[in-house]
Length: 107
Image 1 (tube, rainbow, N blue to C red):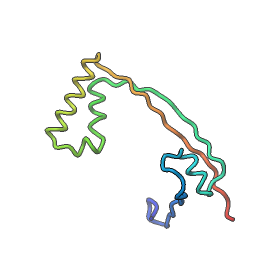
Image 2: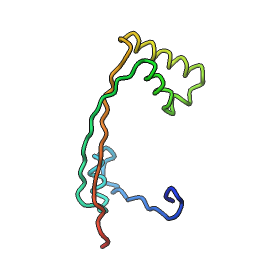
Image 3: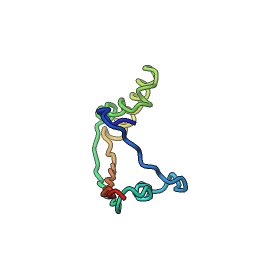
Image 4: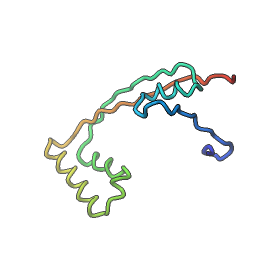
């Protein structure tokens, strides 16, 4: 695997096989043994979208982009109609997680 510039090889960290895939990311990072204590912080926010703005946002996900044009247009029209029927806007709740850990030194 190469980094973005293709300058050097990048080895992904090995995640232990006995860890369930649904284990919290901070536990999976910690169990690689490559990092000191992992700290996870959540940042919550809301965004209000008009029907038109949300339809614009929904044009971007790959599953929507892969639809045939007529089906995609019908889906986006249905989304616009549903939001309009609910008063013209929707509020979406978002959560971003930030994981921080210091890399262990060699040895």
